[in-house]
Length: 117
Image 1 (tube, rainbow, N blue to C red):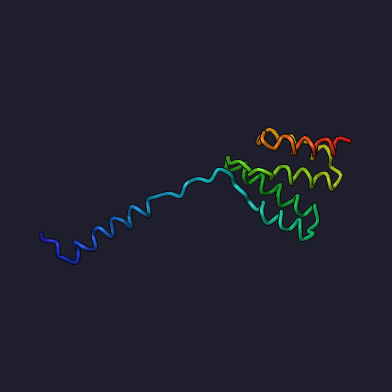
Image 2 (cartoon, helix red, strand yellow):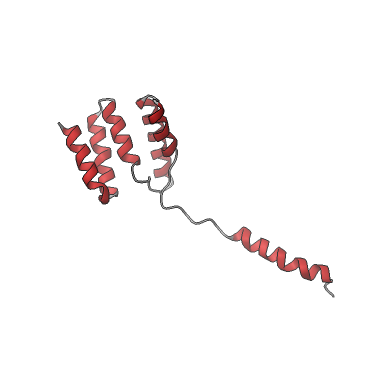
């Protein structure tokens, strides 16, 4: 069995395509699940309750996949809870943000002081 010249040229290219198809994209460190659009909606004036609903759904999807929300996700959700008068949930989310991202402790402590009054 002989391989034609054309096949010799195409075979390496097909092998590269096959290898490229097997490569998986690296897993991201955080799962955003609509966080960025919700922050944008916040600045556009969307109601806090609508944002809370979307962020809670996103948080459930993130947890279901065993992933981690990005920095600021829980803090934003906590501030939205505070805007709607649910201070207990606000404090819970802010504490969770602080525990997950200790580098944000100074800012989260500032927010906690504000909402604990």
